[in-house]
Length: 197
Image (cartoon, rainbow, N blue to C red):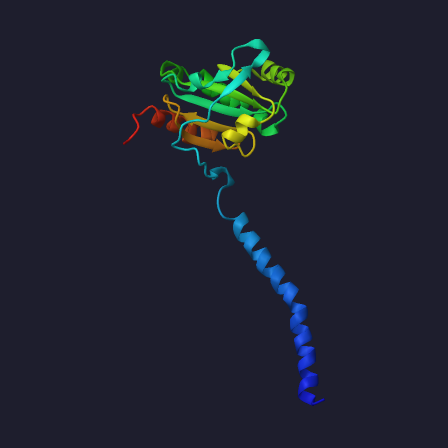
């Protein structure tokens, strides 16, 4: 065996040993880039600009449920998907109460509906009884099927629906004082404008 081949063997072993480290560095760099690739609350929705998926949800304690007709009555609807078990839903609740109490929006016919996802009617009743009920109607989605149809990633999520049933905006995550003023209310007003051809 020559001196050159003896020297090449340790070099090739060193390269082979560095291969997993190099692969790890590449994967770590890709994950880092994806984690910092923008605001997670700006997840795209394939439903924006499309007709809202059909709804036929039972109501709370025998009250009328939430149906397609509610979303196609000519008024702008705000649909908030929530759960009594969801901590961010409790955090956003005061801002939904503010939205529901807005006299200007009420006069324009804006209606706030709730969809209780993967929750029991008893827990929803206790949640709304303790913190107030901002919703004109609550639809129960105990198996999360409506949430899947609507493309819900996780609660809370809020949709703005034009009077013809077209989804025009989606907020992923809790509504805050800032998102209420900077996103939700302007998008509600925009939804009242006639659709552009």
